[in-house]
Image (cartoon, each protein chain N blue to C red):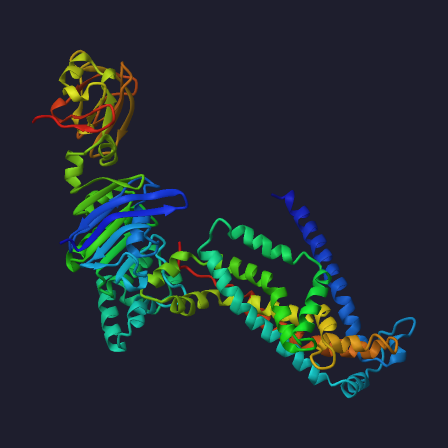
Length: 277
Length: 345
């Protein structure tokens, strides 16, 4: 035992260093963006880059003045919440059926669902654009909600399936024996037991929809544009304005970061029970 | 008319015919035990009665009413599961009152019934706890309590004791028997443990491969098994069954004509150790001294293996040459297909 202790400590140190390096590497662009958002355009492109400077809020004022932030934020909110609720409404029954009443095809169906995520979105661009156009849904929130829902469904079904699988079916059988209808069984037994899974699935879907850029940019213009579209405005025609782009990006991600920060506790909190030996 | 009637009940899992047409009549207040080796379909049959599996063929009647395709929630049966299947997010009180709440009973009635059930099961001090804070035995009581508060038409037990340790299992078995006596409720109990079957049942149903082999009172099955399977399934240690040709000519001569080419079955208490000179010669393979009784495993010179049970302490050693006295008057005879051959007496 004594011989092993130093190697254990060493591996701990190495792992800690690697973990911190990876974390900093991932965080650096975000941190740098946050810093840049408070610089002037000149400071933003200064060489060597400035770390210490006098912060300014003018970028935020300009972004809000030039493009209506609230309009885009509201669109983002509607599309992400809408697609999350719609997705849960479709994915939960699907996952319920597959987790508690599996058939021979269940595994294949799950794999097929996941495989759709491997196709590049661009592959479906033309048909979806034409469909949206012919049904008069270009630049509409409805189109985005539907697309986001469909794009996230495979992951939602997978996550809910994995979560439901952990719930012993006998508990649901017991509810049935106690006289519960399917709806009562879902509401009074399954929902309280799976609330952690459902919440984390919903949050993930919310984040994915909020961050979605490809379809937001290709299918929307001024009316239904989301925050992704707002950010994009500051990168193209008039050249790159790093400080304003950073300010717009920060404003776009801030709500979801804050939301994620506050809900992480609930999501990580494990529901440890003693129902089944 | 029977209270619960099973008429040609069938169940398929894909191509596999798991339950192959089961007929059974259960009278009100009866304690029925389904017993059989694992995979025989006893739990499936219980789940078919419960309504948790779809019945593919036949008819199920309860109290004169066809309930074959009625959903589980409408059958008014209560089930105690092997894993207890308590609602982990509810307190003991909520667990026990769940069914009554769904049935729309008033708060007062619920409280009265739950309190009474809790006092019967010694759970009064635990009503506020969640299942996670209870021991295995207590959880088992809650599961039983959840069933009895409802006063259902039939109680279904699916191997309820298999998660308990040996001491607690014995104790809970006695309590279940007592509970059945007090409540007088019709009960179907599934187990693979034949001691539970023998001690609890009014009638035992022995199942094999989705078919009923025999139905009868515990002692009836012990004394008059219809075939070698039932004979060997009931009783511990199991009945000694030896092909006739591995036994001396004297024994073979005693066999009824129909058992020629078949085998002889002797309960361990029907095999006694005597001198080498007087009995069937054999060698001791293993001695199990259990205190109250001793089990002696022997092998005859012709190769037949047997167990002898005796009440007094044995003084034989492993490897010793002994003689066996076989009590032919208590012997069971089986034909070449394993069916019991009835002797005239």
